[in-house]
Image 1 (cartoon, helix red, strand yellow):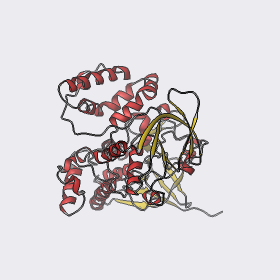
Image 2 (spheres, rainbow, N blue to C red):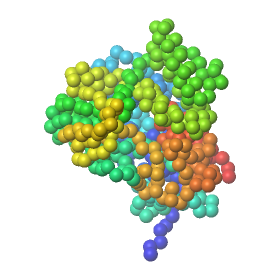
Image 3 (cartoon, rainbow, N blue to C red):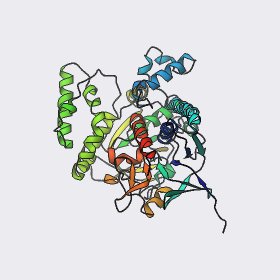
Image 4 (cartoon, rainbow, N blue to C red):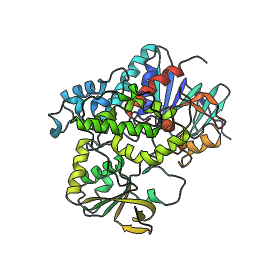
Length: 465
């Protein structure tokens, strides 16, 4: 048997998308020499699933003023974009009249922004004797031994460190094999694969499962590929994402109403505030946007029963109202709807055989079949690590090093991001941030959430044992 030589680092970051990159940025800014290793199979850091998109039509769903990666400077992206545009880069001509802060940047360009901030942090880190190395591989196993974490890669390489962080990002349903029958992914076209879509018949009948922001991206991709045929979207609740507008400021009513605790109380107050806004001629999105900063507190203090009620009864409306579509993408959807090419059916997906779907329409008991030429899985993100058919989730769960989070959303951790094992004991060595903590804070994927977590976790990782 060949002996595997272990390599050593101060911190191993598992995942080099936005979460892992922002954590490395925060660590490199600390005046303390350290060796940081980021393990990411993609050729570039800072992109991950979300920001690897190359089409200009795949934009952020928030304007530049909302998407800074610097928790201490809300205008950081706006400032970077201003310089980028002054140097002759994007935007497209249709958006030239908008202030930079109101632009919805393409996700690929946002990836460049994250990469530049990492490059700057690396340069600063060298002054402190710190480095951040990108190891291009996939992590297949993690073990804890005495005072270190042992991280095994798919090339039989091993890295050891006092602390390791799961910054694995999201598992898009369209790209993630799950432990469930159906064969949906095998039959489906990737929602972001414009190149493959260009090989399709422009008049092909397209079926899309899911009506969230991934569906919006899929429609953008089809348009970029020259598709002009019919598109049918299947959604359990029959809801489209609302378009994101730029409403005026609204009083932070939740700070004043500290007695609001249950999801039912919260929804009643939000509806009341939205009605007040409309009566005053103010966009209903204004009061809803003030809820954002309170989500983690409200979710964490809710009971298990209240959380289940929210997920079962409120979540679809929360997603469509809160996770809103960028205006350029929404304009494209509205055009397709007006032309009669894009339709939505409120139905439950049951199974797929090739590009034929079996569904049950809302209000009906008998299943029916829909026949298409192309199938796209836009059902969102898989947060249940027990279902993800990948080596790392399997091994972590099998070893008892992690425990599913509330409602099986991500993983269970303490307030500092230390993962809890199967016995509920917080680790001193293994941490998580970003999407794996969905169940802990509910909203744990937005740029500002990830940036704030990265800053807090960096401080935790640098604490002495």
